[in-house]
Image (cartoon, rainbow, N blue to C red; front, side):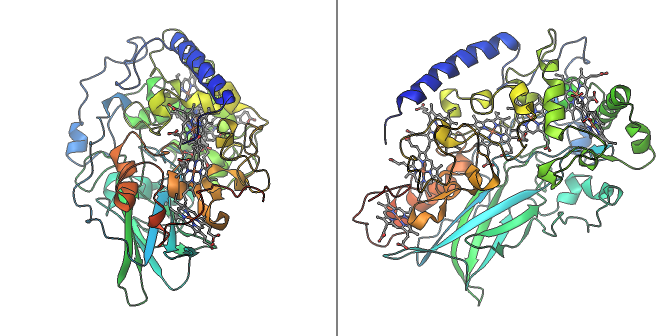
Length: 465
Ligand code: HEC
Ligand code: HEC
Ligand code: HEC
Ligand code: HEC
Ligand code: HEC
Ligand code: HEC
Ligand code: HEC
């Protein structure tokens, strides 16, 4: 592996400074422990446990964010056995390293349950090829067969204006089904994964299988990966209430007071509030604001930038975990996080995320900001050029970028989803690579795809002749 270049060393120095700085800002708590909550802001934290309502199956989430337990360790039971490689190899991943959605939809909605599975099928050979024809792909989310039991999303879908059968996601997918063929990959869009197994265990890292089948239904290849989903958004650390619903009502009350809106009354009258009905939110396909100026991301990060710094608030050490899952979930679990690189090193602080010059979900960190060596060929680089810090369009996002084999293999196929770049801190994220090549880390064994050891060197992007 190439040694990291000088700019990266500078970044490492900056990282250390930033880590020290962020300690100053949020001296209390530790992101690996449940956040302590200041008595002035919240009732004393109960012992961390599953609430009786959860155990009885009548609640969808812990009553308070600090009630979330640690996710189950290790691989889940019931994974199918690994299959030896034959004519095809299949690589599958979730488009994001974490999908968050709310524990409760009765009052307002930021994001619905909505995972997106991707897969690429490679016909192995002397010249391997990415194929999308003549095969069918099936996906199956293990242990999440009946999401309706563990989210009230479907009780309120109609109130948000969606006609959905219970258990069906916004694009018509269930937690198991068939993937659609796209130009160079397969996709299952809007799979309604929830963070509770059928038996009620809270598990933000369920696993899914993808099987390649021939027209007769014979399985030709199979893989497994993580379908991350988490409700651990800890708004209630500051919007204190005794229930998730109460916390959501507090949020609307604050919005009404500050913006002279009438959202709480509307919600209580049976019309829960969809934030993107006003604020632009590209994650929901809404690109223009209606009756407002700020995108949802800009409004949320800009408004709360000062709040997460207020003295006396006891927040997770990593303040991003106040809203992003979370102290227990740990959405960031990639190879870099294990050397101390954290959210703000790539994304910047709240104010930078809030900048109105950014397009949320599009203007993102690029790997080439720090990794300049291997990814440098300006002719071939589909990811942003090394001397720019942010991606400028959707095509240059990491999750949409490709390399190697004629520039046809997604970065995520070999390296994993954003925030889970392998070797990741969690065994489940590494399982696909372990099954395919016997070891964790990027897909680096040529014979996963090539049937003969290639003469040439491995390249990400072809260097000019
Ligand atoms: C660090 C503490 C903190 C966290 C965490 C937090 N908030 Fe807030 N939020 C506040 C404070 C303080 C206010 C201002 C309350 C007021 O003006 O009465 C506020 C106000 C708001 C407002 C109204 C803004 C306006 O002026 O219109 C919204 C909407 C909101 N929060 C949403 C959320 C959501 C959603 C979450 C979780 C994803 C969240 N907040 C997490 C502290 C927090
Ligand atoms: C009826 C339209 C409407 C809806 C629905 C709405 N907002 Fe707003 N919101 C506004 C307007 C108008 C402002 C003032 C700033 C602006 O024009 O963008 C605002 C401001 C905010 C602010 C404060 C921004 C700042 O810097 O002062 C936050 C945070 C916010 N909204 C979050 C939310 C969230 C979260 C939801 C969903 C629960 C939501 N809004 C739903 C219209 C709306
Ligand atoms: C007060 C709550 C809150 C805090 C604290 C917070 N976020 Fe967010 N963030 C949100 C919400 C809500 C969304 C979802 C907005 C949407 O649906 O587009 C979001 C979305 C994002 C996105 C994707 C949208 C975009 O703008 O590209 C990024 C990146 C992000 N947050 C980074 C961060 C980082 C980094 C931190 C810590 C420095 C942080 N957030 C802290 C509430 C918060
Ligand atoms: C190594 C750099 C890096 C670190 C560290 C990092 N991110 Fe990201 N993040 C990215 C990149 C790159 C994307 C864009 C991924 C894409 O769409 O291809 C992204 C996307 C996001 C998004 C949009 C949705 C998604 O999941 O892709 C959110 C929200 C987000 N980051 C929050 C966070 C939070 C919170 C942390 C810390 C817990 C964090 N990020 C740490 C690089 C990083
Ligand atoms: C903020 C700078 C920064 C960004 C942005 C960044 N990285 Fe890194 N990355 C690092 C540093 C520093 C290391 C070295 C960590 C170590 O060796 O302990 C590293 C290590 C790695 C490694 C392990 C390499 C090895 O030698 O084992 C991989 C793989 C990797 N990064 C991939 C990515 C990908 C993919 C992206 C884009 C999604 C990305 N990085 C974005 C700074 C960054
Ligand atoms: C994930 C699948 C995959 C892996 C793993 C992989 N390759 Fe490839 N590779 C391809 C594909 C697909 C092509 C395109 C074949 C073509 O059309 O020429 C290719 C092409 C190549 C070529 C160009 C062949 C030519 O004739 O132009 C070389 C050289 C190569 N790979 C080397 C390697 C090496 C060395 C490794 C291991 C370090 C490796 N590859 C790992 C999929 C892979
Ligand atoms: C065919 C599999 C494959 C694909 C596709 C792939 N990579 Fe890699 N990548 C690897 C392997 C293997 C390594 C380790 C290379 C080495 O040992 O030199 C690596 C290393 C890296 C590193 C770490 C380099 C360092 O400084 O040590 C980064 C960053 C990276 N890749 C980013 C990307 C990005 C961004 C894409 C998509 C544009 C991508 N990779 C596509 C297999 C792949």
